Length: 257
Picture 1: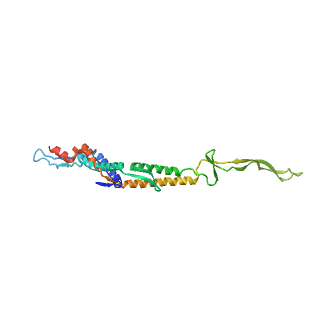
Picture 2: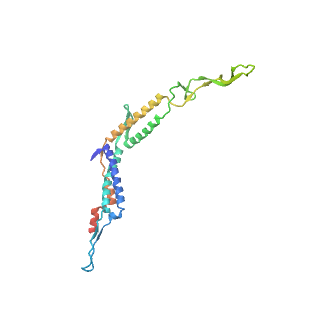
Picture 3: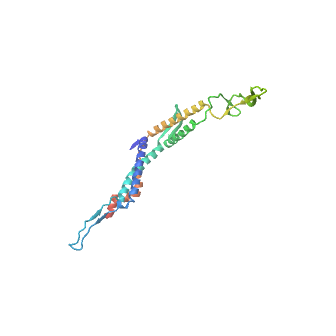
């Protein structure tokens, strides 16, 4: 019987979850002695005139062989669907194409999934690349292999104390003088800025390429997942080896014998 890989991928997760839940529940239940224990007790007085006591009975609520049978059934489905996926992953392949150009041919599904994750990480990296300050005009410095601005000059000043006479001296009063500081040019700074960042256009172009490649890988994965595959039924021999002699029917037959 054939199916599509995409259909197997869609049902694998809930089947896996169900299998783990059943196995976990069975694991805990078989450790609860009261569920596995039953009792039947009747009372008979020593003589006919003795006090009568009601019979007591407790039913067995869980048989270990039933827990095994339930686990085996759910694992059979889980193991088979996982085998179907893994066998298909060895066969399902697709080309990675960007703008009509084939970059890789016959790429298997596991590698396509790997590339999707890696390209997501790369997209995050590209988004955080430093960009040159747009407020500056940048030139490429061939000698230093970095970007630089054209040199520009700024004045270096020094504060020099000055006196401001508020009132001239008279015969009766001293002069009133206030001191202040004046910024006096003493030199000129010539500044050139350097940067190891990238032009915004380059970062944008790189981001576009990463996104285009991510899309191409997703398209390739979807194409590969549409491949017709053969359903695998290989889990039975494994589980029969483990649990075959512990099924409820086999156990009952053994007791009867």
